[in-house]
Image (cartoon, rainbow, N blue to C red; front, top):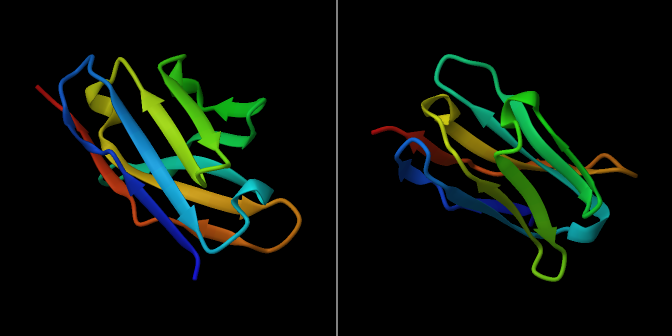
Length: 117
């Protein structure tokens, strides 16, 4: 059974940091590209960052050097280090995994990130 479980969300003040984790199981993690998406209330889900391999990372423009995506294939886990958080970063953050050679595409249940003073 495929599972993507996000954790690490919470309430943080503007300028603060959070580290999100996505623990994967039920598929060959190292063979999948991974990404973080987010969805704020009343808005469409948007891409935050993707990582196909440690040297192949992409970020949305609004990240502006504040976030770092990484993955540990030995632990079947992906991370998103978020620094200098802003109130507009408030959203539910979702983990996504997709196969580059087949039809697999999986989502986690999301973790809430709230940036507020």
